[in-house]
Image (tube, rainbow, N blue to C red):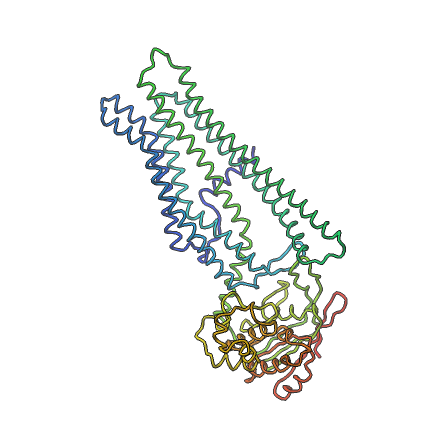
Amino acid sequence: MLEYFKELCIIIKNFIKPTYIKDKILNIPKEVKKIGMKLELLSLLMTVIGLGFSFLLKLTNNLISLKYIILGIIIFMLYRSEQIIQGAFNIYETSERTKFDLIFDDELVYRGSVIVGKVKDKILKFDDKSKMYKIMTNEEVMNSIKNYLNNYWSLKLKRIFNIFEAISIIIMIIVAIITNDALPRNIFIILIVFFVILNFFVTTYININRKSFYKKHREYDDKQSIIKNDLLRVPFIVENDLDMRINKLQDALKDSNKNLKSFYKKMDVSRFLISLVESFCEYGLIIFFVLNIQIENVTLASIAEITATIVIVENAIWHVKRLGWKLDFNNEMVTKLQKETDDINLILDTYYKVQNNEQEKKIVDIINIKPFEIKYLQESKNDVPFTLVSNKDISISKGDIAFLYGSSGSGKSTFMKMITERIKLDKNIEIPSTNRYLFYDEKLKFGSLSLYEELFSGTKPNLKKMEDILKNLHLWDEIGSISKDVWQFMKEKKFELYLSNGQKQRLILAKILYFLNDGIDAIILDEPTSGLDSENKKDIDAQNVLEYIINYANKDKKRIVVISTHQNLDNLKNNIKKDYNIKEFEFVNNKEKSIIKEI
């Protein structure tokens, strides 16, 4: 019983003053707030009208008994018109609700997109199971933001009106008790108090079970995610592998469904109990009146009085039950907010760090990294963890060209993400780095807009500058062989169509070079020419591309250039060694460690 009382106190506290993150970036947009407040005010008005109308029948009887027949008939007609008035309100409310939902959803997506655009690939979430930091995917970030804002905005819009509605219901019950003449007040009070206690008990019971449900639901979701990930990524060694994983997925789904059915069964039974008691109270009142009235004393006035009292009791019970629903719904939203709180705090913290870095960009002339030993960032449950080690200081200065060599999986990409602040593997390790960089890796691609729009990113295009870059990357002629008008081709076509992998790589590199400016201290290229190697002699020479990129990006010796590759670059190094200081780092796999050695 103590557990129920504590839970009830939490539910009421959440109803009066819910706990949520207060941050200006989470504020409700004006358009959403304007329509939302109108809807909640309309809902409150409909509640007050409904409560008021429940007394009209009693007022009709009093007026008629005082010989105000015409006025009594008018009030009675108003009482009968409640459904018409409520129907008119419902039609308007439905229209406004549809408009509100569309605007609300659009604002959620817009707000989420703005935040994700700033924090993508930068949010590191510590996993207690693997004891490593993982990058939150853009989908995870967007879902967290949308889920949080959906509940947060709803709570903010509803809170004050919910309190007003609760107050109006309490006032209605007090007035009903004071004005009641037909039913003994002790019975009336006991009836209402009993129903209030029952509603609060049911609401508390549902919320206690909801917490248990969500806890188990997360466990089953984790199990399903692991198996689904394996089904998509892990090759099957023997035929039994597929059956084994499918069977495990089926078992996890059965457990999840069992948990789901159990919770909703308890919720349905609880609400059915409320409805049953509600019906019992109403019919019990009728029976009470029938058993306690003398047939010879029955008059039209006494029947009207009984009817009016039953209407008031019915409305009181209905609105008490509605208040119970609101308490339950409000607490569910608060529970969902609490689930997302840690992630939202992490997202906001990263967001403001990015904002501050953008405002306080400092020129970086040198990247110094002290000796370190860190675990490789595990990005999925199927990645094999290893340790990346540097036993000596690593120093890369302005004007240097640094080459990173090593087999796939030796840690080159992890190292490059470290120096560009895309990952941080241990809170105790500080690696000085620059946020004034452009970064290329093989995963980069254009979006769903045209090649032209993606290439110039909505800025006023300098066609001559881009044409020169495309020609030096041997793309202009290649696209020209497909279409007579290169720019028209780019305006009509999308990234995933018509271009080879090598052409896609060079198009992304062209965009990086085009937007290179004095605000960039470092250009980091992770396997920039991996798709350009071929036995076909007509294909562009990868080393020529790299040489052009280096000369274009660092001709004034003001930048740091870091290139990761597994190719032989002897010719390139011979061509540029007179003009640049070359540094070479080899990533050597040694059992479960990958050691960085400067050559």
